[in-house]
Length: 185
Ligand SMILES: [Zn+2]
Image 1 (cartoon, rainbow, N blue to C red):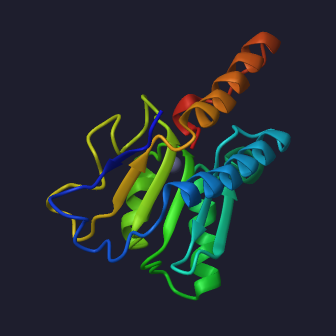
Image 2: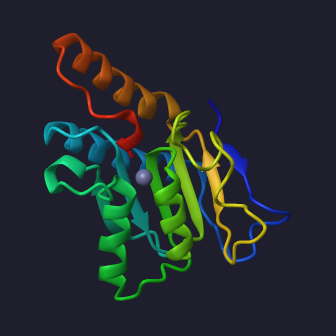
């Protein structure tokens, strides 16, 4: 599936200063996010990964879903990556940064990206139940918000979605109690 560029609002998003990024680098960073998703599964978590890169292309935040490990409903991959990036940048505003997530972020994470003033979000597979960018009304482009970010969907969509669906299939096969899909990113 070819990545779909969805720019909220009319232009590139009023605060999306330079949402630079080539298709090739998006694929390479998404591969790193997929490695984080694999690490989540090894840790007994739902396999979702995220990373933050700055304007120079340096990875400044990495995260994977760890809601069970931390007993923290907010410990989604994107939140963990944002926290590390903000700590590393010594700044709660990650202006010019891009966040990569293997799955479409939920409402909490989509809101956190606004708080972080992120320039650009790239995600892999849609989350039809909880995704807050396309699957339910977009949280990135509401006209009342004071910040918008560019959204690129469908990067490595097949691989990102397959890791998750195979995980849940194995959970069902083991008749273990699979984690709630609503808390999966
Ligand atoms: Zn989330």
